[in-house]
Amino acid sequence: PLHSHARLEALYKCWVLFWYQSNWTGRSGKSLEVDGDAKNKSLIAKGEAETSDAGSSESSTPTNHVPSALYRFFVGCFYQPLDSIEEYYGEKIAFYFAWLQHCSFHLSYLSIVGLIVFICQVTSGKWDHPLRPAFSMFVMVWSFVVMVTWRRRSNFLAHQWGTLDYKEDEIARPGFRGTEHRVCPITDTYVEYYPPWKRWLKMCISIPLTVGFTFVTLLVILILYGNRDLVLAKYFSDQEFKITISTEAVGQTAPILAVELTQEHLHDPDFWLILVGFPTVLGLILPLLNFILRRISLWLNEIENHRTEAEFRTHFIIKVFAFRFVCYFAALYYYSFIGVGENDPQATEQGIVRVASTLLTYITVAHWWNICIQVFFPLLLFRWRVYRERLHLQNELRQLEML
Image 1 (cartoon, one colour):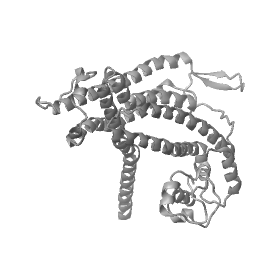
Image 2 (spheres, one colour; image 1 turned 60 degrees about the horizontal axis):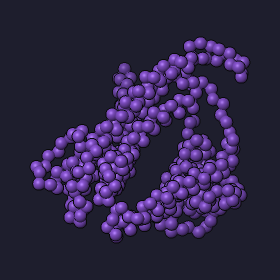
Image 3 (cartoon, helix red, strand yellow; image 1 turned 30 degrees about the vertical axis):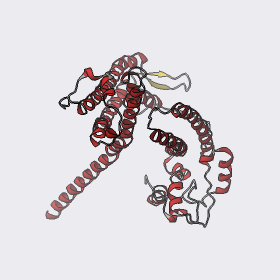
Image 4 (tube, helix red, strand yellow; image 1 turned 180 degrees about the horizontal axis):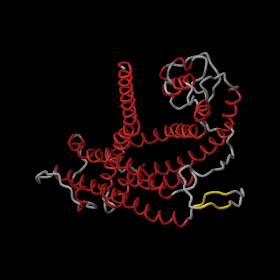
């Protein structure tokens, strides 16, 4: 069978339900495997301590001591049974979750420093705090440390899984369609051949489509940000409050400076409703647009007729990455170079509050909505299809019984 239910069930209990007491009884919750005695884990733990960073050293020596529930939850969430994941799903999936584990551990350090800076901003009443440049330098150093330690960590895992310096000999994709057969100079066999000029001719159509889709989305995002500041200024002014959408609102600094960050405004629910409401609308729309662009990109990749999976995947990432970069970083660049205008401290603080609220919306509403679109909706659709098939099968069985 494609899946072994017993192995998958054990992996699920240890991986997803990591805080259960049974996962820490007779084994370490930091173990790389579901069964801590499956291999000589003491040697692996020793190798990890020597070759991996401090955050990824996962001692898997079985122990009879069961930690407290808080320790199991807050410490166990940083560790995964990567060896068992690799054995069941393969190296690519295991490396993906190893990267998530690595980033999650190092993000804990960054979150602590960021929390300290945030507390300083709140206590001083200045969002444009002098610690911000130092925090930016810390983020740069942190990024470098993450990449260096990940290189060491990935090399250790690759050596442990037998994939170090492994190069895959790719063959033609099943969807690749050649126009003629030519002799390969390496293998001296006939292979399908597709002229590069035809692919480039089709890319001359796909590239403008992707750029145009991304540009229109960027324009809509900028218009929404500009009108959010305009609506906020009208609401707290003596003018008649009316929600309007205009392209002239993009780049105007006056609406941003019209609303001061006073205690009265910060404690007003309507202030935060308008400030967060517009990004929430974007957070609900962008995953849908991303889903549409993914479908369009896959369709364009099929038209471009790439020969290998690596080429197909690379061109797909290029198409999708540009759109996601524009969507999730448009607020930062808008309020850094367009919305706040000159180097005004008040405008800078206004921009920081708006970028922070937009980021908070993206990592909550947009992220959860994206999970619903990619996970729960397909799951509901699958269960509905299974239900219809079972209902159809029951009707057919009834008809056979009546014969």
